[in-house]
Length: 30
Image (cartoon, rainbow, N blue to C red; front, side, top):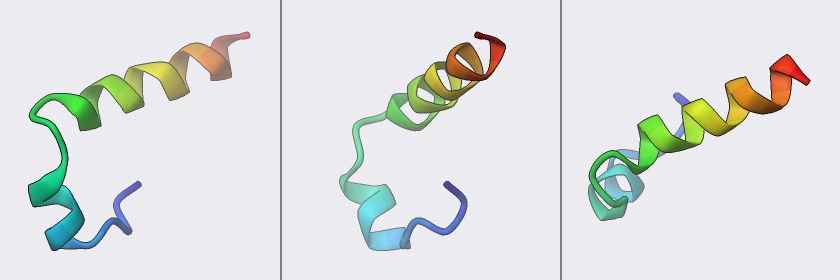
C-alpha cells in the first residue's frame, strides 16, 4: 500500500487509506 504514487494518494478520498488498512486487517484476522 505504501507503494502508491503521490498523485494517486492526492486523488484518494480522505480516510480511504485508513479504511483499506482496516479491511486488510479484518481479512487477516479471519
